[in-house]
Length: 521
Image (cartoon, rainbow, N blue to C red; front, side, top):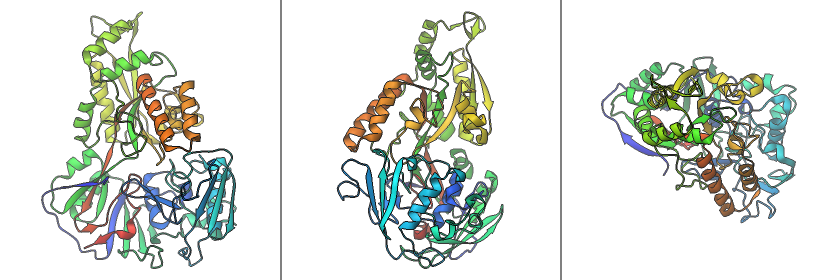
């Protein structure tokens, strides 16, 4: 199992809320149309109301949802050349307004994703579809311009930007989906339907009695909008929330109570320090390695996350079939870091600060204030590098500006930093080409290695799992040597859960994927 539980101690009052499960969101959704979902909160809410063709369970396995089976070459769902994928759909599934779900909805969803007027978060993979058609109402055939191995683990499931299926009968005649009434009054096939949205306060969902997996076990689900973390902790202690995702710092601040348990699940990604490889001095991998050796990652994990975030050695999460356990980041060695810095000409002056040709080894570490882990990581690294004579200045930039495209002056992609704390969320497939290839859309480090690009290209086109595993192992080893990213954490998300709530088994991608199974005893 990916999830584990641990016991807490103490007591708290328990308000009576029969037939209701409550959790919190950090902000009010901008839209309830999953096509426009950009935050984890919006995706959690979407999964209450909408379904995907394929889902991911609590063990990190791809499983059927609106599709009857996961397409593969073994079941003839994928052609020998990898260019044709066939989905067989469930019959008898209905939208929450009573209309039947059919292949037309899948085809419409693809068109909505790829329509540039809709500005979907990502069209990755969907833009490789050359043709999509329905030979009958419950079969969808997808033909790709070229083989693309992540297709099944991406289309209408958990790619880097998860995408459920939308209702064609409600949206196909809308001229502007961004302004459609659907954004406020969504209709899905999912286990719960929206009954009330009190802006900036709560969203109330009622069980869908016609849900294809069976009527949900809980009558109501309430998502409270609670931007303040102290308030969410108070609500959790008092029993007004049945579960909540907590940062390591919040977990420690919560204290002890016998009414709650903790459930952990691996995050589908990593926390890392990106080096700006676009410019001196960190365009030199020798300096990047010396800096890495000056950072005690175990101290970061213990001091900032109390061990909740184990160390990461690559960008592949431990539950991925592509993860190579033999790969390792440079080991913490202050003495070796000093030796290498000296050898590179960066020598300490009388004040203890390193200089070369009269220039101070001064670095800017960019972080975002919305994350306690990001802020404290920057502070710890600042002290550690300071001990080695490296002058580090912390630059805090809002999360909204951190990840924007370079054309919109996003800090990372425009390269306005030396070091930066980054969080990379992967899809279910191990494809990391966006992060590490020369033209990758999320190549925050600005790193470019044509040989690595060739490995990535082969990994994306191969239909052999064993060949892809071998290629991703080569990729992980090459990245560990070149070090455009210094991988820090392989986070485990921690959920505080009311002991009376059963069936809460979050996946690495969503805590609400099986909301229809939640039960309050």
